[in-house]
Length: 256
Image (tube, rainbow, N blue to C red):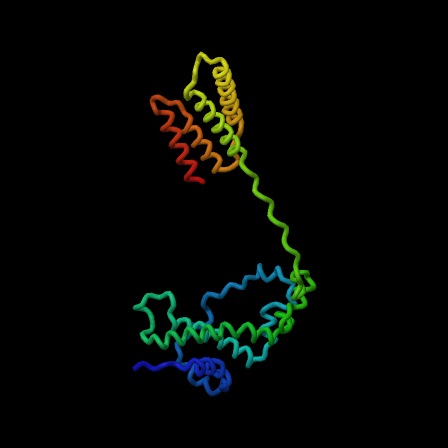
């Protein structure tokens, strides 16, 4: 039967470890396998922190804490990393700890420490984090935050995107073309009125097509729609132009 870890005991033990006098542990340090202090350093992200008018650097903030508190927080950070390792999330099943209860409890411990550390630091460093429930003074002074509880005005609605003019031109050309084609159905070529009407529709079809040809689409969707229109209206007996236009249309559609 696998042993089940006591979450509260582990969390308390991680934090209470610093209460043991250093002298009582010094004799055992020589027996521990440590990598020393010459390994790769963590990034300090100085470029980001320089953008904030902090009252003191993060290193200075750390040194403002008592040795006992530094040890408490350092132990908690080590505990989070160790608990995450025991939890083993993301590792192959063969690389994980075999005790599922232990792994689940390790996840709870890591989450518990992570969720508590913000509140702990907030209490310890109000000049850096701000007093409980408020922003720090440096953020207010720099105009980087609104007073808590401020009701902000509703943002201005974003302007509607401009409509590609090719779509209305294609619609007008399609309507004119369909009207022209419909006029041929049942046409009596001896009827002067019908022939005059047909002439008007032919002229309107040509004018709509020529107007369309003057417009350059402003969107990739408009490019595709124009290619579709030409494919519908193309008179191409040998099919070569159609094949080229279908290729162009496919390229435009993929890019869109």
